[in-house]
Image (cartoon, rainbow over all chains, first blue to last red; front, side, top):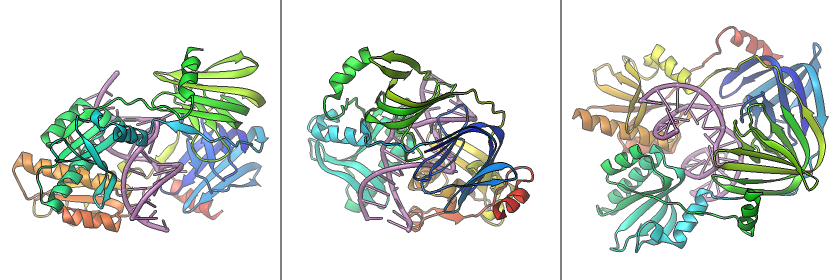
Length: 226
Length: 226
DNA sequence: TTTTCAATGTCGGAT
DNA sequence: ATCCGACGTTGAAAA
């Protein structure tokens, strides 16, 4: 990993174009060839190249030029003053363990479909068609088909469209009108509920707690306290 | 800005949960309180906190602990070895100038609606309703309403849904069936064209070149060459 | 390789 | 504060 701290300017041309005038920034070059230009604020780099760009360094007119190209995208950084230059190989064998993704929510619902509704049965998971994909295909207590779209966090209009389109396709294809569509999410904004109702769709807010594998829960308990 | 390079482990609890074991990483703390933990590869930080987290540093059992909390989210970094510690205030008055966004494409179409179709007139821009927003509302040469959804880059299924839903709403509300829906994008995948056709929607691939304000184009010409 | 979708998305703007 | 959509989104998984 290479760290460069100093005064630079940046130009980029690719999917879009940008120019950033002189200023002090941090530039990080990783061993996979990704490059990050960070200003003093914000989570996002102001300019960057994804892995594979493999930047080239050269001197020109007394400036250090870092040139990172990848596919049709080019970023050029010019330093006129460098306050810090660090190179270090990072040894890191650990991998991130992460829980609480949408897939975890889908699994939790499969383990206990009654969080949607009593008597619900999950028949299939991850049903993909040319008009999009839906997370769960179920039947309710009465045996009616139920198409379920699951969103972790707050549901969006796009989720309603997706569900609506799939329900319509299903009706068309199977020639049956008795199909329910349910949007399941951690939170569903009021406006979205109205929209769902006008489209003849249903919704459920669920709150499923997902834990990391292993004893993290116990440790986190102590950890939050400490 | 604070840079920490050394051996650490990270735990996070908030919208999701994660744990990352011991390894060498770069930690960046910005003056707005954002925190980034970067491994040796990838554009994305493996763990982070957005601006406002304002981390607190303390020593505990011989470890440097960085604790960054924000709303209901907590990230804790523990260092057991530090190879580099840098603190520096960054002076940076420049702002990024960026061109080639969706808004630029919309403006270009407004300047010359014939890129969609000869005789097209733009009546309104950015039309928002409860079922979503559409970028341009036009009338064609024959005076028929045309709803236009603009996407920079490659169009997605979601764009089709959005357009379809809005056209349907418009027909319902105005009680008129003679409404066209056009998806305009830099690129529209084959599958999407089929989907659009089955929904009675149209599409246009456009290639509008957008430049940064000022003389960037000339300079970029030389720059790319050099 | 292309397509599709999730993300601790982040970020900015409008209501 | 909430809601909504764009992003040089990135990244991973499936077709």
